[in-house]
Length: 369
Image (cartoon, rainbow, N blue to C red; front, side, top):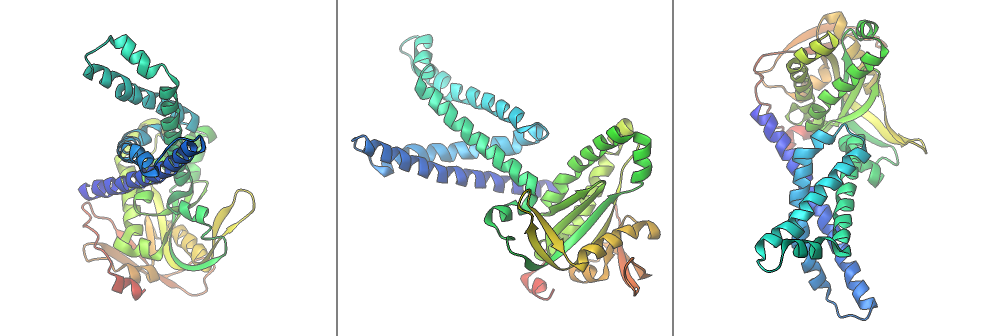
């Protein structure tokens, strides 16, 4: 648990640093704009002076504001619509600015009345401009974070056009499917079943993101998750992701029993291999993976019921994962998969109550994949 918490903290800290870096770049652009505006109006100005006015302030604001949002507010506001979250952020920004610009200086200064001092500092266009500036900057940051959540860990590739032309790559796939989903849907009805799926997807999102996985698609009660080969195999992230999802749902079993009368669990199929990756469509572009490995991973997941297990891993993936001895696996020889003429060997991970830490792969190991 401590290792998982440390990994989550590290990923969140990295996001805060990226936000701070983006704000610093924006501050350089704003300083250049101020400098040019002063020169255009015939006033003396130095670009370095304008930058000095903004740099340290923006650095502190990025670390504090980004940290406040990522570590404290984001999880609380995640399910709110953007307009609702933005209005709350505007309120938080207003309170912070009133404290920093008005109340704190008023407490420090001994001359004059508080009312006069506060009115001079708060009831003017300068304070309004400062409020609008930081509110829009925080709003833009929230929007980019939400867009990243929308597209997952691979979202940056949409902006850079990395998959504008199809690419050949090696990827790991995990196909997840909820057990007994048809019977559960009939029992709950469409509306409550939708609520169940929405809550389940919320619960399993963080384990997927923390494992550096990319949610490929939702199809009803099925979820497809993908990793680049290096990410998925490194530290056995793909397997650890399923273990974390399983642990998360076990810990939330009482909640689901109380609200839905069931304790949902997922079954998973794992496989890796070469795929062609690219974007399709002019409107609502979507990334797709084409290759036999995708269909095979889906068929491996479908075979879980036949063999009475909640996970099945292809022989090819087991060989490159190199699971340590602390992780017990059982071989299923002669397995028949739909669409395959020949039988294949599958493996299932035997769950233990206290899984061992997962070692890192070296670059040398990955070069042999």
